[in-house]
Length: 277
Length: 255
Image 1 (tube, rainbow over the protein chains, first blue to last red):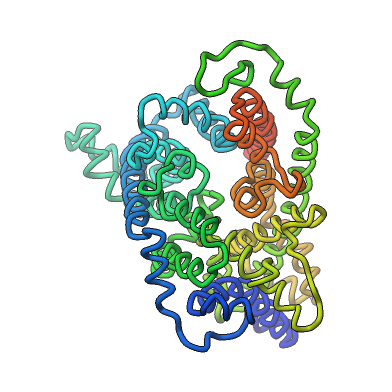
Image 2 (cartoon, helix red, strand yellow):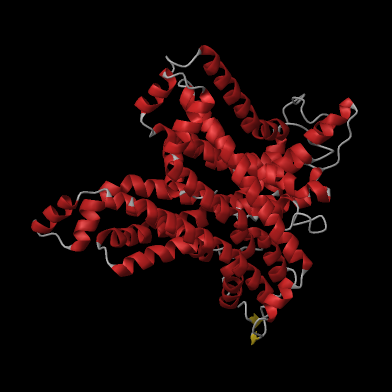
């Protein structure tokens, strides 16, 4: 297409793409620059480069916000939820990809329907249920909520992977005397492992970044996830933007690092699952 | 829940449609609903147009494609709370942000988040920034599936860039656009994070949407019934959108 389009068109295209890239990068760059400035410097000129690099913003953010503790909470709740999602949803997706009966269409429709429902619909009853059971402030209990919330997306995505496997493969395994579990575990699971990795990345990212559910279920400072802790930090030290931006970078870094390493899989997974982050 | 009166602690009591009478009698409910409709209109037009445009430009720009995709997708990866705080502190804040930087040039601007007329649009801009790159990448992926011979033929016939989009590219990826339109409608009624973090629905309910109103009923007023009633109204819009989506899919499956 480049051969046939004029040079002018190509130049303008690159120009517009570059402008869009600047817009996309401007707030994160401000975040990085500000994280290395004194708060007085930020107020004096928000756009200037730091006169001296204030690395102590990071150490102060780490101690003031107890970020070590809250990052660990995030890791725990995300980790358990991802394990739950990958194990249960691969089984459910296999079942939904297998037999095509009238009942399964209803299950699919039900799962699709749940993705459109607002979290508020079940958040409040669930909250009081959890409170009754003494599970508030329990990061592992929260994982089960997340596993339920992200299951429909995971099942739909994994189902497409199971559907892509030729039927003959499974039939061959049956002839060789494999039972259903062996077929699933030894034959099919290795083939859908790219799908499972995608599901793990996308649901992991969304859970890491999730705010509404975690802020409702985790209330004491010690148990909060990093994102919720960051939210309360803004309220406490609202003038010290250098420190807040340093904390922001520490929270965002794991997600962005993973994204840059595996951007192709992230983009494909988000496109396939159409989840809003 | 929507038909009960409950404060979260005592035994729920059945009250029929009283909760719906409560929310329909609350003027904030209607302004929140109207804000959701405004939000939907904004997100159905601006980011989809930006996504379609940037996606097609990526098709032209062969070199650096991956770089641009990664850059556009980066805001999607950053946690909404972090994005919200960065915009709040570094852009909108009249002391420490870009808005304050204009004072060097004698332009004094107020924080758009604190002004009732602009609050909703200021919040929507942040979500727009966070969101449009996703659509650009999705639409680009869809464009790449378009038969390149078709594109070449149109270009050889002397089609301009806009004619190419209007007659070849956009019709070819119509199913993707339809899906994104339906999803946008659903998500617009679910919008919560940015509103909650940036303005909490304020000032004076100017940026209140249904989801934050529901949250307010539940965790500020401890009235679960109206909270559930508002959530049901949100679900209603989501289910309508899903219904249309399933219908459209079925029709396309028949053809």
